[in-house]
Length: 493
Image (cartoon, rainbow, N blue to C red):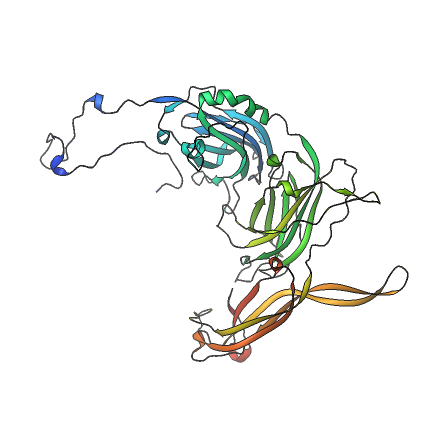
């Protein structure tokens, strides 16, 4: 089988019973026959009409730049339908971000295809690095011309851009394993030539002006769940995050959390002065990357997620009496799935929220963002542990004396006495990260791989008032070996 898409062939077939087959002419007694068909019956006359393929190409994020000496990091977009194609000019990427603001169209060519939409060749959008197509997206003509309700849309009066994620062309294979193949903001349309003539000027004006404005981006990262093990031997992960936006990047947007697949982070990253378009739909996506810290020469890239800024996340600051400007608290965060090249190819998710603060005057001084750590209260987690079942051998040895550990990451309230500005003693509360855990007793009844515990576990801890910030309950199985000298973790969830 081919490693990637190589094209399609349009044909018609018909299956008939053997006794109804047309008259055959025997060539040889044991060889197959060939039908005699008059040339005029080979193909029916196909009704055709004129089409146009057009795209407003705005910007790209997380484009796969090359680190090779002398390699080109100029990118352009090519759209194609059959033998007809058109492309943007080359633009140099900065930190994986590129702006084109270009209209590409096949209107200058006589693009005639069948009236039957299903007979039109597939439409491709290619991402080129230099002269090489490194990734692509493929659509059928029907997917572009009609909406989900089956209604013809053609060329809307106002282009509707959306972010499309590319797939690597495995046949060319110019990207290293795990390299994200890029995402680009494009308004793509395919329709009748008459429709294009009426809407051409609206599409042309959509790419003429970026209308830039100064902003401050605030990325609030609260916690992560179910992150994959990145260290050898299932040794967990030491996660931290990077943020990229509009060509700017922050190598360590959060601090490293040691050996934790479900870290509580509660940190805010800031890009204090960044230029982006005023139109919400044209603002580049925020790219957040997950990395694993290593003691070696380089850290390990784990995955990423994207966020498109929405209207309620664009904020005008409020001027205070002291001349500074304040920003309201962020809206409630949501969970984002982590992936490497396409959705579903990795594990883990991140709880985050975003704010894009308008800076109408470059001299505006914004107050420091308030801490995003939620309020906690004393709580208890009750667990009824029945047992384990069907435990498989670990490191080529059968399970011997298992127990189960329940743990939850939380905080502990510390109360200290400090003096205020006037020298009076004042009580101050602070939160210290801590892990609460409880273990069952060991058991090998009725047998170690299917041990019963039959215990009620209560974990006293401090948990957030809002359930969305509640940390994950981590469950692991410990096997006691060699009289207690070895206690490996043989499983977790």
